[in-house]
Image (cartoon, rainbow, N blue to C red; front, side):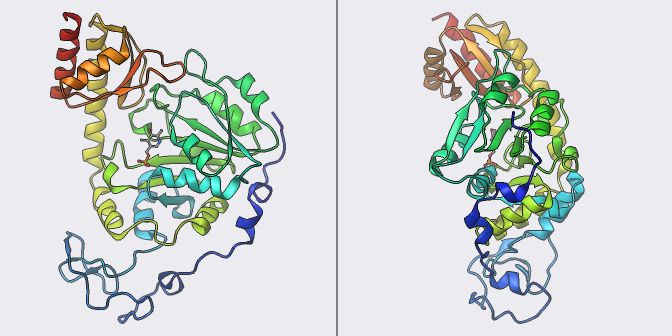
Length: 371
Ligand SMILES: *Cc1c(COP(=O)(O)O)cnc(C)c1O
């Protein structure tokens, strides 16, 4: 591994350093006023009003008895960040919010990776968006497969990194394998790689391992991604989070589209963040169901192996994954066929359902055997 001092300035693309961020009306004036005639919004309101338990604040989206949409949203989503800050124990200036984690991934490419020159490092089998975003941005992807136990191959990783490697993506717990990546191995990369280390913690709420958010003060090159799409039950809201040192957050704010998180998402996220008990209850249920389903699957003849999972899904090796996938489809049960993915021969990825859904799945799998 090339050991150098981490220097953010050296990593950022020249055009990004030089560009001037768009300055929106809501950005130039964000104080209190009663008449807003600065953004060419519709002064008469919006044809729909979202009923909301939130109180009204003049000049904001919340007017009268509910939420209106005629005003542009807060470009920096300060209220949402404030609430998240208390939940996550991170100052708001270390939080970035994106239109899903996918926006965060794309922004990191656009900030750090010079198309046609730079490369990123990923560890298959893993989340597909890292590679899709690389192709979209004309950035080369270097791949070092996980080991047979789905852990990082540190020696091969050291050899793969070169002077043009800008980003390393570690997904932990990993999708589609479900396991957490060893903390010590992540530490080795964080300590020795002078580019950006992205830890994708989409499934962290289901894991025994702790989040790396607590390590942000130690590592200026660490970006932790989380999302409300999984444990928070809000995949339809499109809200991803990145936690990082302030200079990285500022770069992301500079490059993002000005109003990347819409008013509905901000208001609904604020409401949802009040319901942390709902989230914790369903994390507990999901983990119990995961272990139950795992034991259940291991009793079924078509199952070859169920891999250890720290997530809300199981990677299951089958006797003939494609055949079983199709038979489940016929019964109206859709799982993810991962059998063509490296290290996942004959594997299906099965999301943990409700107890009833899991029972039906197990029932159908038992029937396939008797065909
Ligand atoms: C589901 C998932 C996400 C979530 O992406 P969003 O765009 O926030 O919905 C991110 N990373 C991984 C590995 C995932 O599996």
